[in-house]
Image 1 (cartoon, rainbow, N blue to C red):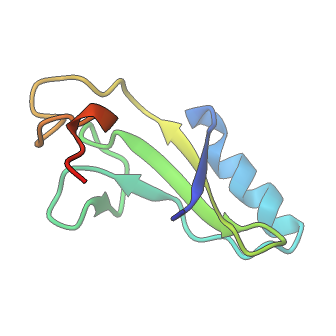
Image 2: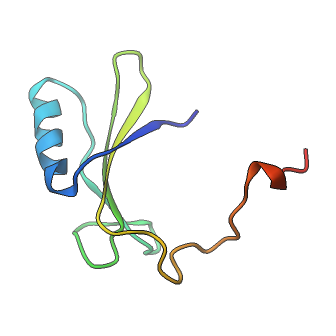
Length: 90
């Protein structure tokens, strides 16, 4: 498992980060995930589809709070053919 993610309201992502920091949790910066070369942008813009913060729980499990800024499903949002368990070959 890479990490576990929770969907949070976009308007509260900064508040949640501040609350975690106030509790002494080591939290990364808010990441603006987009389709740029690096996959993240330094600031919010129309191409950002989710804003995230990452931190570890007391057992060391990586946790993400993900705040979706728009619905994914526009043409070009997915660059690969979707797969399901039925597509497995091994």
